[in-house]
Length: 250
Picture 1: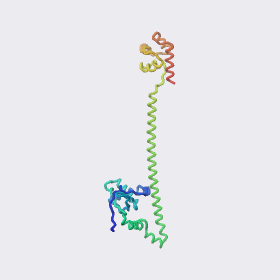
Picture 2 (picture 1 turned 135 degrees about the vertical axis):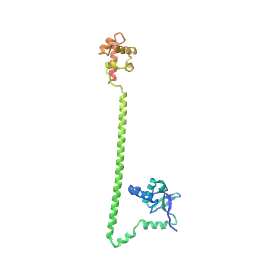
Picture 3 (picture 1 turned 180 degrees about the vertical axis):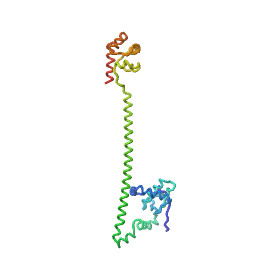
Picture 4 (picture 1 turned 90 degrees about the vertical axis):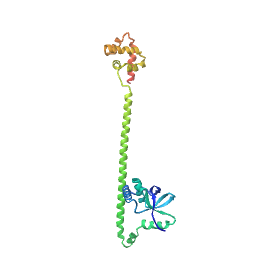
């Protein structure tokens, strides 16, 4: 049985281990190297889950790097070289994974003769873990900051929308106006709309406006009654007019 790699579409491979085991920087660098060389130097080992789908047995990092390479350049990153575990090669591949990828025989032999050597790989491992943790924390902080800024901008837009709606409503509310000022300034359409609730006849309203146009503004309510004498405006109607404006200003 001759061992050889097979080209498989990256999208047909799945991985059970989380992507968060690796930093974004590590995956990004590896993905670019895969695209530059158009292949991976350490093929992924996969097992069939169906006729056209596979799951990663070994090579989680290589898989996520290949998936990122496909996102960057679909043409170059579409396929990846893999070793497929079949019935006839399962035993041999499993042994190779255990021997070459999951252990370090040279380190094991050295440990038996010199126990001091263990200090160096432990230090490297701790430094690597520390760097990975720092990088992941930096990514999380950056994402939180970006999300916070987005929420603040959304809040500002919502506040502006509410203020605009309140201003629009305020503009629709009739402004307060004194009765005498209304008789001296409002046009016939506005004055009619104000006085129709107290059943002031349109002809009387026209007489009020005509008198104002001819002889100027009214100086007081008494002046209104005096100038409108005999024109349909009496004491009772004047009181109704005053009361109607007072009620609308409450």
